[in-house]
Amino acid sequence: MKRLMMTLSGLALAGAMTTAQAEEIVVGGKNFTEQQILASMTSQYLSGLGYDVETRAGMGSAVLRQAQENGQIDLYWEYTGTSLINYNDVTESLSPEETYERVKELDGEKGLVWLAPSAANNTYALAMRQESVEETGIESLSELAQAVNDGEDLTFAMNAEFYAREDGWRPLQQAYDFRVGRGEVKRMDSGLVYQALRDGQVDVGLVFATDGRIPAFDFQVLEDDQAFFPAYALTPVVREETLEANPDLAEQMNALSALLDDETMATLNARVDVERETIEDVAQSFLDDNELL
Image (cartoon, rainbow, N blue to C red; front, side, top):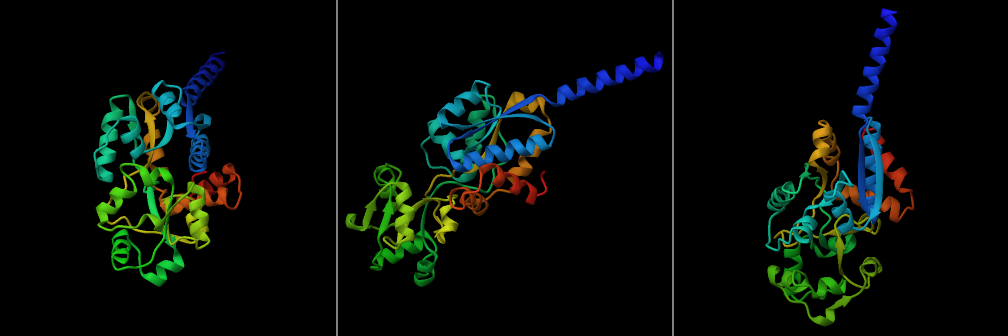
């Protein structure tokens, strides 16, 4: 009887430990490909580590952020520039490191913890076809500006928002000291920019640095060597209460964050958007390849 009681006691203790370890973590994600991949990747990764995970992907940015502040979402991947500008109303120009430290401080006051930033920076960028880069030798925005000033005949494509916004096309030209005539700039929807650049209708296009069409269409992103564009480092953000309840979570998410950079995210995005693989399969194969499942 004593042995039976000890066995039952042990089972009860094991059950209690399992319950404690299985506290649910709600993983969120925004409503575009990159975010959906990351939400699936994070959920599969944490599930494999033994967490009880619920996934709520496909949310609008502001709604997702509010849900995390309200405690309905525990963890999702956010961009440093989005938090700085959209959620904290900071408009001053900051370096990537300063941007991260500022949002870490400001969001920390709201109970949100920014973990280690990845090397994936989904910011604005200008890109050219690889063959054009090889022909012209232009690999940076300073070299692009010099080519324009030397009379190189180049045409540009960008969306109307970037053309008109106060931190967009006009200040970019001012920062790099060059001037392009209005007739050399074609304004169009963002998606059409990639097509126009691919088809040779323009020489330079405004892109997002981790877009899957960059590798798929053989584009090269020009180096922003004067750091004009804001930093949008992709970073896991977790509620402080969630970290306190799951002390290993920060180290585990930092390990995943360390594997991500622009090229990796662009390749994963392309597998979904261009090659039409499922989000779940792309996320799982990445985890398998990196021995995280």
